[in-house]
Image: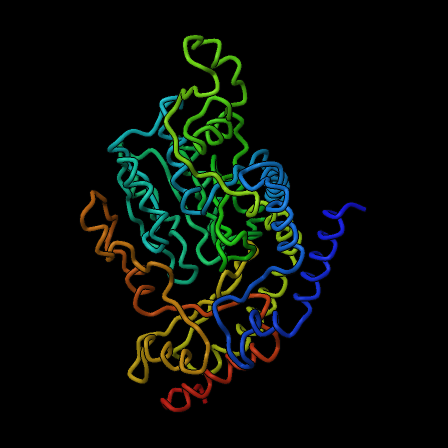
Amino acid sequence: MSDGERIRGVLRDHIQQYFRSEAWSAAADAPAGTVPLMIPPYGAAEVWEALESLLDGQVTMGGKVARFEQDFAAYIGVRHAVMVNSGSSANLLALAVLASPEQAAPLRPGDEVITPAVTWATTVWPIIQHGLVPVLVDVDRETFNIDAAQIEGAITPRTRAILVVHLLGQPCAMDAIVEIARRRQLHLIEDACEAHGAEHRGRRVGSFGALATFSFFFSHHITTVEGGMLVTDDDALASRARAMRVFGWSRAYDSPGAISAAHPEIDPRYLFPAIGYNLRPTELQGAFGIHQLPRLDGYLDGRRANAAYWAERIESLSPHLRVQREPEAGRHAWFGYPLTVLPNDRFTRDQLARSLEARGIETRPIMAGNIAEQPALRDHVHRVHGPLTNARFVHRQALFIGNHHGVGQAERAAVVEAIAEFVRTRGANAA
């Protein structure tokens, strides 16, 4: 055995010991009775895989990223997955691919993209960054997802695409949305950044649109710390996405030789047939991904068990509380656990949030809320379809709490007790 192999073995053993130690538990576990938004979901396998890449000097995008891409494409049920440095970058790349001159009928500045009013900021910003016009459509008050019944009325001659969001892991009503996109000949993009493993009629979200995106940020179902993925069944879109991920470089296309032959005057090592970005992930991110993905279904089982427990108990605590439920035609991925406070004279959403936070139960608004009310949007061209009544309601009345593998029976019960105590002090309990 060489010195290098011996040292590696010692390092690997020490890493495994550390992750079994009280030191790691102290760093990774939440204090008893508290529920943070997320705790670290990784372990020794991910850290050792990443460290091996560092020790080998193979740190930029390479074989581990490619392996994770293949595994993730198979999991979603599509032909291609293109890893990038974040879910936000995946959204940027999806719009860039469809706006590329190589596209048969590319998206052009001024074209409209229909998207839900309740969403995350970087669902909408890439639309604007490509000179397109976001058209904000109201959401369903129960699911927080785009109201498919309102999409048709938002379509104009300038409409070219629909970008749906499976918000907080709740799958959209894809039957109606797919039918509208097909009949109206519109590009369909799925933002599934919060919906890893969610399903509609037994089919995983991310497999319905021409393109779909996922995020592997630290707080998501699985993590590469930072990272994202664009997925598609279309060979040409995948080839274009891989090239635009790395500057528009010819070497990233499926047929770089043909491109080089068409431009013999340019050194093929530095040939750029398209514009692009630098959105590459690292091998360290790929190293995390290949070990995180096999954990995903187990994590989802835990999240669904938590959601079922809370659904049974929370609404019964007060007539002013509503919980979200799994759709009959789908499988919710429960990125977080949403709660809605109905308007009443006993307590507000913000009062409930402050009470939970005081007990170590972290809360957040429903993402960016009604994006039409965010100040950044006022400076850019956009269109609002209808009064956005439900989006405004969600913006003011709903929140979510953490739901993840670190939530067990004690944490579930602590959430219920915290809410029960709060509503009792407000004289707002169901009894």
